[in-house]
Length: 412
Image (cartoon, rainbow, N blue to C red):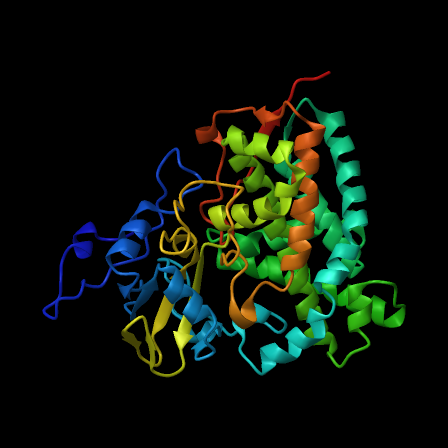
């Protein structure tokens, strides 16, 4: 997707010529590492020009300081209709505005209003109070996994169900509808899905959630969605917000549990350290978020001229933010390509930064802190059932991870 020659050529002013596209090809046999070209670009010039598939001349940020600065600067917009998409074949005619309730594609003050209504539902204290329930759900799912073994797909039997059951219970969604909802949200995450498939998934999700919203208004129950019906959100807004929360809760943490387990199984010394020291759990979650960076890329558009790392980004120009490259920046994280659960990985950008930092990050932390150690302790002989290179990766989704994770263990 990029012209290697463009990385070596220089313009008359002595700066590197614009890249002709975003590197996306990962090295075979290295499912945890970002595309190799990103490290080279970060070393050469952490913020540099890039030509987008639609011809727009914008920027690519690969350095930690540049990516973090742009994420935290409200002079850069997240509005979909203002940004240019960095991957070919998608949205080359421009993106439509964010659907109502989609908080990732809007700016303040609209974003601020939604965030204030939701932030109190996902506080550190409230999420930690959920720990006992997450432990119960995890234990039950491990029992189910054991009954299916000793060889299973970890994604379907464990990594997907645990966070899905938690978010459904939190929002007041019948858990029996979990698989139906995952079917609706899957095309929304798949960059290879057709426009028709994405539209059909979105419409089906919205129809389901709208019916749920109306039922909660009529008969509130003890859940976040019922709480939100008492606020000033319209039915349309509440439908959009609830659909947004569901889609995120059904997919992202599931990928971290599965992909994180994959990484640990491929780094047995780190897995042994986690099993042997329960105090490592909190730091392990942060390091896995940094090392894996399952949301690898973001895009922002400058609303005015802004100088970043000595470069002038002009109003209207898009900047592609390689979060996965930033999280591997040796200027911020020594020996960044090593998975080290004892590392102080605080400050990673795996949950984003700034006003769009992941709303559900505390819930995700609780789920990972409970689910991953419980899995490893329940199945001390857990191992991959196929060679690592045969694990099917989600190379064409906006959340990176594994499609399946075949595992096995020694039956007792």
